[in-house]
Length: 506
Ligand code: BES
Ligand code: MN
Ligand code: ZN
View 1 (cartoon, protein in one colour):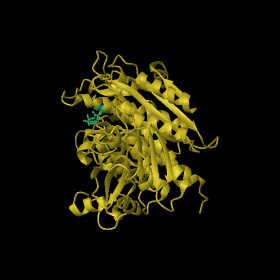
View 2 (spheres, protein in one colour; view 1 turned 120 degrees about the vertical axis):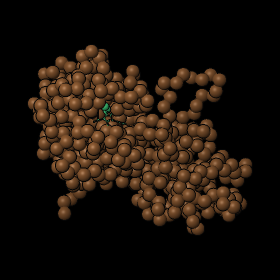
View 3 (cartoon, protein in one colour; view 1 turned 180 degrees about the horizontal axis):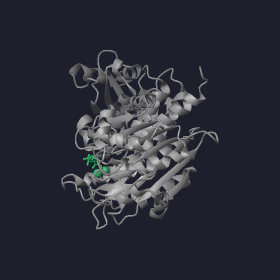
View 4 (cartoon, protein in one colour; view 1 turned 135 degrees about the vertical axis):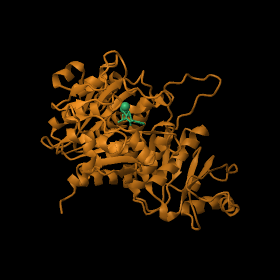
């Protein structure tokens, strides 16, 4: 989507669809007042009648009389009370605008940014993200329907700035927002693609494409290289499948030569049937989303490269299927992971932590300054937090706080779970160094503890995105399926680190 941010009066701006945020309560924005005046008080009348309240989520499509204003349609989008206005509310309002544009078959949309206390760059970035995310559709697997007019792609947007806005800051916000949201849409597509298409080899090809386009270094390990590395856990998960596993490594060298990199790791389990500890059939199709952590990692690396963030960043995606072939690992099997630790497999469905163990251990060779991992790791996390927040845990509270802050800033909300030592007891094994499941109690946390055993002392935070990486599409800028979470967190965290490194130290 081509997005421009410009100072313009919405009442005088020509567009097939003009989105105007409406506040809840008395006072309206100058843009609203001006447009209302041009429309002869029709907007004020809507408010008086109670047809336009400005509550969050409200959207009223209005057709101005010919010649009244240059806009063909006006979408009045509620954003709630002025004091409650956040970047996420703007993102959602922009998402509604993009979706209505698509419905109205308008290829271009204008969004009138309300004057607010939110910084221009932040506000415009959120709107740009909402527009790009809201315009997303997953059409890859549908045949063209000749009986209907071809769908219109919303590919152009103007963000109309209020008086006094800083045009330079706004342009930067639009640029960053477009790059981040386009990357997140890639993560959504990778998530939505079915397991028979988005295989480990497909994710590896995608990484190679991104690397070629954006100048990243790419390394792909196959079974042969994994054996040489001693990646007995990732190989064991893959051995029940005909699809070969891949370990994907993307490197962005934006920082100084010797600077320790930030490392992000994402679970790329392209289909999780559970293995011999097979899952129930109902809902199993959703297990194509078990690679969403890996998808967000590839997407974030694309955005980080495009933004040319002045940091060294490494993205690592262990990728495999978890099936039930004759060679599949069995409950009771003991594996030797990368780095030498032995793992007793008590449940073959706890496979994510196995492939991540090898990837995390492999990551240490980069001598990371800090490491994040994201994985659709446990159903227990969904039970604990539902779909409203990503579960976060780590071995370094300052780093956990960075991730929580990035979650708030980007609208990808996180909630910290405790890592009390007590939970560690549950994954002690009688036969090996560790076992891969601690049972149902505290399942998200015992999974976190399992990963932590492979991290050692490196600063590390784990994001369990099982409840947030895909959803029902009720959020205005999303559709049913992949959400792209935590692409925005990954990018925000890396950008935050870059900003902190640039700032003169106090
Ligand atoms: N991929 C699943 C976790 C999951 C569940 C993601 C629901 C999204 C929605 C993971 O591999 C898994 O199967 N975890 C098991 C662990 C258990 C066997 C210890 C689980 O959560 O049941
Ligand atoms: Mn599983
Ligand atoms: Zn899984």
